[in-house]
Length: 215
Image 1 (tube, rainbow, N blue to C red):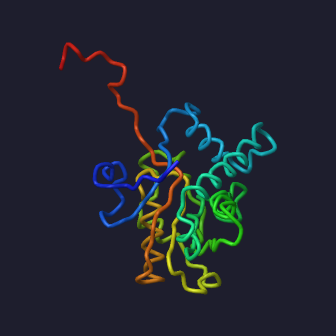
Image 2 (cartoon, rainbow, N blue to C red):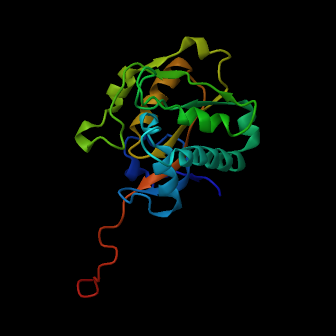
């Protein structure tokens, strides 16, 4: 499995990104398809809520997904880049005092290999609706996310040489753009790369429909 870079051919699917943003992904997640296919199954299990651990079955699948993604990143990322990079997980939608606070991104990063520089430099100050459950009109804007992000100055030293912003799924790209803004202001000139397990794709509404009489 190897990374694909978001380029001008698919950037319109992630329209919060800027042309100069460097973002890479391993898989494609099909929106609205539930557990259909390996990638969707892994992502859905990864997003299981911590508050449901005791009331719903299948929690062990979340742990399996975390280990699977750590392994894939370990075999796909350049080891020389990893030697000098600082991996910064995008914080989950819930603040640390919320019952659904989830550090799965940090767990995936730390599982890539021992000794990596993994730092949750950016904290979320208040809980928000998760993007994958909020309706389009309720999703936080880039500006709202920036307002809700805070640099943890206790984690800023040593100054990063390369930053990898990590998240599970790239959809519109708002969280990445907000993280990029906050981190580039704190560490001007430091190269930043967005690293994603998957990007969201939307099924073709005409798939399976016979258009031979129209086209």
